Length: 114
Image (cartoon, rainbow, N blue to C red):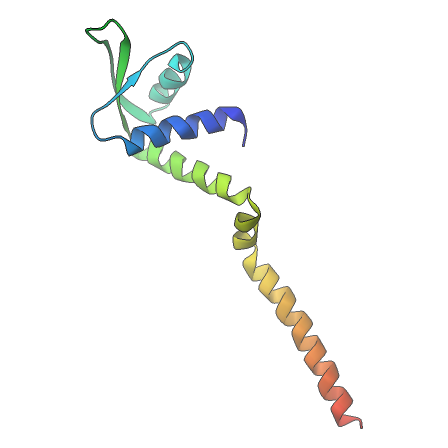
């Protein structure tokens, strides 16, 4: 997973985990990401300034934002070896059972031909 996707996932996860309303401080680092997510309809909310002078975004995840977050979490899990095994478990089962059934067939054939 590239850095852009990881940044999206961490921001969406932070919004999902925080109790409502979520006030995200807008910095130079995350300004473009927050605006892009708002433009794509992944988060909703408004942008304003706090009494302290810092700029905040009151955000909430939309349904498409939740779907993207689930997809990013699934993709991240698939990159691990356990995720790979989970994804391909039926092909692995088929291979193992095919190998075992072949060995059992050879063993039975050997017993019959004696």
